[in-house]
Length: 230
Image 1 (spheres, rainbow, N blue to C red):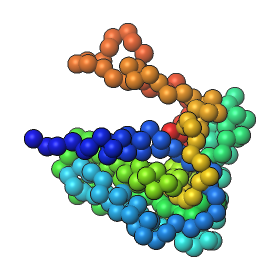
Image 2 (image 1 turned 180 degrees about the horizontal axis):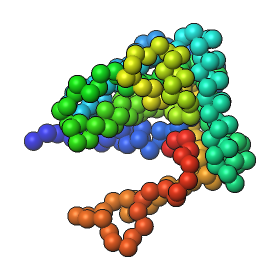
Image 3 (image 1 turned 30 degrees about the vertical axis):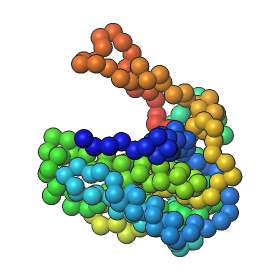
C-alpha cells in the first residue's frame, strides 16, 4: 500500500495550492539561476497525454524582444477592452500583466508536428494543450513554494508572438509567464478582490453520475473572455 506524505508535507502541498496567485505586481530583483532551473524542471515533470511532452519554453533575455512582446500584449489589451462593451472602463483599470517589472519572462508554447502523436488524442486532440497547462501549473506551484510570484498573460496576438519568436509551422504560443520577486501575495485572487468575478461554490461544479437537469452549470456568464485571475 502506497504511503501518504506525512502531515507537514501534505500541509505544504495544500498551502501551495491555496496560496498560489496570478501575480501582476513585482518588485526588482533577479531569480537565482538554480531556483529558475528548479522551476523549469518542475514544469518539465508535468504529466502529459501519451507522454508526448508537448511544452516548449522560450526564455526571453533580450530586453528589446521583451518590449516587443509587451507591445503586442498592450494592443490586445485595448482590443479586449473594446470588446467588453459596458465593462470596458472597468477592465482598463485592471493591471493584467507585469512584463516590464518581473525578473523573468517565459513563453510556453505547443510543439510543432503534434499531429503525429495519436495516443490519447484521437478523439481529444486538445489534450496537448491540457498537458501544457499542467506544466504551467507545476511551475506555478513550485514558484509559490520558492516564494516567487508568477502571472499568466494570455492577452496577445498568437501570430505576432509566433513570428517574434521564430516558431516553426504548427507551433503555437499558449502563455506568456511573468516570474519574479513580489512584496506579498494577494490574500485573494486579484480579480476577486477587484470584484470582477468570484469563486463558485464547489457544489456548482461537481456532479455525481450525470449532469443535473435544470441546474445551472459552472460555466461563466456569456461574454468575451477575460484574462486568468486565479
